[in-house]
Length: 265
Image (cartoon, rainbow, N blue to C red; front, side, top):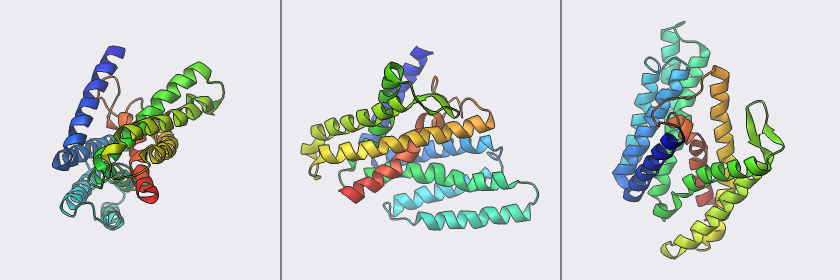
């Protein structure tokens, strides 16, 4: 399992590097693909992946097309409002085929996956996007790795004993500090290629905040799985599970990094 997990992880990193560096339509297509797959995995939990979920897939594609043609200048709230009205119409016209949990899940899924993951693409097409986009993965997966190492060595106090018994407060602190240090080091390396000034300082702050958010993203995905009695969301990535299992922290980190970049820089 370790070898399988390692090899699939290497392949995933290569794909991310290739699509991220190329950017443009390639990255757009990659983000749309993982959004649709993740949305399918999420809808499957609520048993609407082949019925009510079709509305969500349609709106996800429409939103990404709007991002592509309008270069990121899209009113996401309007898309959500229209989808809510369409879903409400389906609920009323086909009552009592769907329960309220399925209706809420169909709307939440669109916000949770396609909308939030789209910020990977939106950061990439912004100024210095080639370099700042990697902060999403640096603080998400960097925090996860550092938290695991510190937690194994020093972890004594449980952070969320019911939801995730293995996570510790010491590990969480180590994850945040580790992500901040990684951000500072990365900023020092790429700063000479960027328009941004003081990149090491800004990247350290952004990665620290992003690391905190990434842990909540991970716990939320775990909570949904635990509540519905499933181990993994899918089997697409051998040794890791589905898109949701691997990108659970990235989902929350991407919009936060976008907000921090524009707020601080």
